[in-house]
Amino acid sequence: MEIGFSKQLETAINEIAKLPGIGKRTALRLALHILKMETHNVALLTESITALKEKICYCQKCHNISDTDICEICGNPKRNQLIICVVQDVRDVVAIENTNQFNGVYHVLGGVIAPMDGIGPQQLNLANLFNRVQNGNIAEVILALPATVDGDTTNFYIYKNIQAHVPIVTTIARGIGIGEELEYTDEVTLGRSILTRTDFDKNYIKRN
Image (cartoon, rainbow, N blue to C red; front, side, top):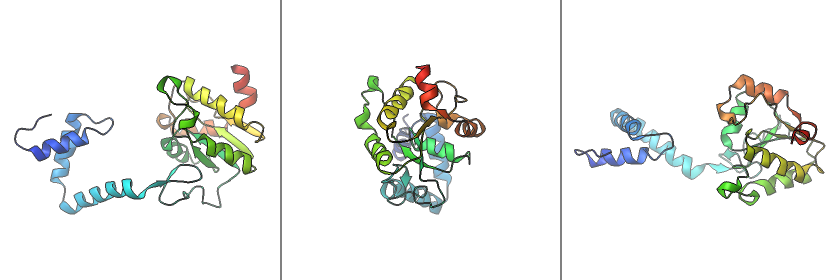
């Protein structure tokens, strides 16, 4: 979008439009809104964005985003450290936490195995997961990945690598529609899926 009367506004619009889901018209509205904001509020916004990039890190244990080396969930003594819920990305952690139905810990893969996109096991946070299971006396691993072909492929790959080291491997109940992402699932349905999770070996293996 070209703004003939202001190069500064045009630059701001073009940069904002690079964000996912933001078109040029929305970028224009946001830029004009920022222009109307008080100077100190704009400063707070820019400082928070800078801090987001410079100060946030990834938990060394589960790969969730964190302000410290170990995230608040992994470091919380009230959480059940023996139950690991495996998710695709940080958005899924937020979605499950919002249900208030899970008191274990997480492991964020950073994606799913997708051969068509050139994503293999080596590109995901799988090695750390396998180490956690093999060395941590884990009681249960919940596979909470998308109900897609790539999600199922990743589920099966993880199951084959951990089945000898953990007594229970479950998957969330299929109240989640096929092809749906967890972040778009309503909290009630997602919460029930966590509570009514099913044995991976008895359900998924036979189905496939």
